[in-house]
Length: 244
Ligand SMILES: C[S@@+](CC[C@H](N)C(=O)[O-])C[C@H]1O[C@@H](n2cnc3c(N)ncnc32)[C@H](O)[C@@H]1O
Image 1 (cartoon, protein in one colour):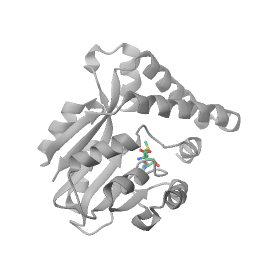
Image 2 (cartoon, protein in one colour):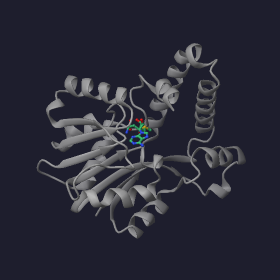
Image 3 (cartoon, rainbow, N blue to C red):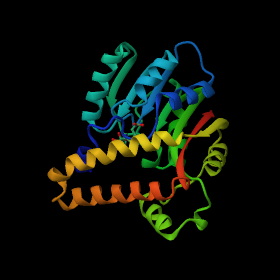
């Protein structure tokens, strides 16, 4: 796992997204004042900084890999929002906070790590009554049964629980949330992300390419990028904005 993190260090962000997408999701939340926000799986702050900027709130950014948080803190200082960001190492599957302490929980591109259904249940007690949960998740944009076999096989291994945006919304409702809105992330976010990852892979290949684990991560990521370029409208990220 450590090697996986090392290979992904130094990217602009660790998953697809943008300031505009974060702002759009935040606007769907409909919160004002100075909200208390808990971010899970923050990475190096790709979403944290825009979130602090658009929300005007206090963001507790949490992440399992310390070097990502160190970079997040540097970026927060450079962006002039460090006074409203608290960074802490925390496992998203073991949130340590008082019940009902946050107006909003935010998670871009990371809920899949513990599984969206588990996340919906585990995070809910930490939201104040009426609090918002906002997450983005990789989703099928087509019926997987109709997907080309190579694509289906890849995701059956990479993210077997991946489903459609509609199925995520139904799961959220079944878990007791109200869906305030959802939208598909712009394709440009994926293009930017994969261009950045591709460059990073070229840079780290001489360092990690001879290690079997490193080789596996590099090869698997290249397959994913190739499949995305071949079938660009088959999967994407959907943002889901929910009210407890
Ligand atoms: C796909 S990245 C998304 C990062 C960031 N939210 C973004 O959009 O750029 C997933 C992040 O979750 C972190 N992560 C992995 N397992 C985790 C866990 N159990 N608890 C918290 N964070 C975790 C990874 O280190 C990584 O930074």
